[in-house]
Length: 145
Image 1 (cartoon, rainbow, N blue to C red):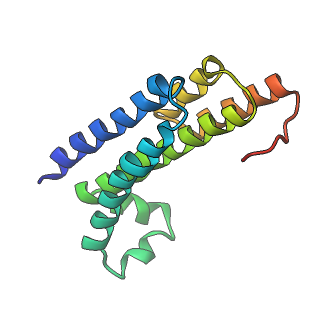
Image 2 (cartoon, one colour; image 1 turned 90 degrees about the horizontal axis):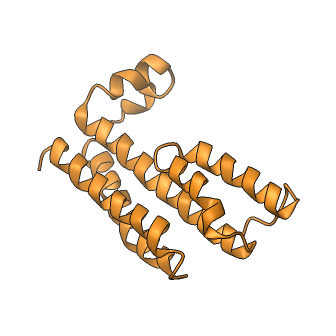
């Protein structure tokens, strides 16, 4: 399968995870079992396979400079690996936001802005959620689990 096809397939799989987080999660408290146990595992598995099958020991030198990292991303398959890393991470952050909101009694509607941002900008969605939680709970250093 080509890198383009794998990109399309992984983006579709991630999209299914986001549907569960945004639409199914308010009605099913066990949504995370599907997202983390199937969607993220599929993305992480493909990520792992790409990294193992394309590993070269010299790759570690590339991580020491911005130019080296940039050179890595000239390869479509390595770029796809990076995309899978992002898709997986974004979903993990979204699941954490949803579970943390449940612990703190924060309504789903209040998490939607952070989740929507998290689809593409997980770190920004995370910060927006923390600010939301701070406003709702009046405590910045609330329990995280």
